[in-house]
Length: 265
Image 1: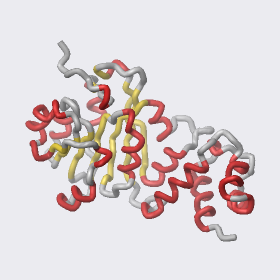
Image 2 (image 1 turned 30 degrees about the vertical axis):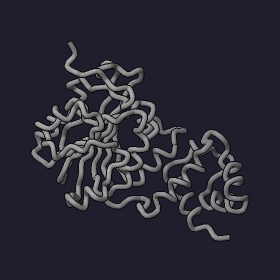
Image 3 (image 1 turned 180 degrees about the vertical axis):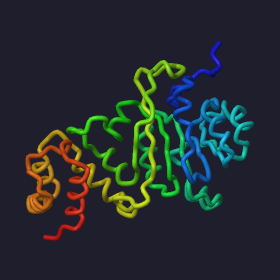
């Protein structure tokens, strides 16, 4: 008999069952951490390992079946029974006063990207160790540098230093998913490359630039920005109008944004 309950498909549940992967996710403790928050802990697979650090530990879990498993580990008052996408970070941080949170999660695949984009905007989250579907992980942090630039990679790089932690095959989970998974570690930059006050503008810019990342960028930007603005911005960056967005370097993405943001006819 499995030690895990039946997975709830509506929550995208796949319970991690690999001691090697569990250890990689839950150690080491990032320097300076003053609290740990786990998203979707389920049947307390990672949670006891995180609790061993003796820091304030909170969990956000929608499935009420797991409350009685989690309560002895973190305390009933440290369990938030709600959707992580609607979690009130402002109220939580105001009440608790934490300045350096380590966020840990085997993320539900169906909401992994919107969750990551919400975490990116919380400056008190200094470190994250997050599990993704491999395809998504490689959009956030491509293994190949050539023709691999995209909006998720660029956006996260502005706020975090990132590295791949461990690969998790389907057999590392119960029930096994149909895809491979990958853990990525995020360490917030002391000086972000784009201030959070501009992050919405930058994300809008990226959606335009990478909307059709395999097509010639000059033609796409002419349609979006007008010919004068597109040509001026790309020329100032030394970019050929025929370059594809996926072939840009991160430095070129930042330069193009700076010219877009400061452009005046």
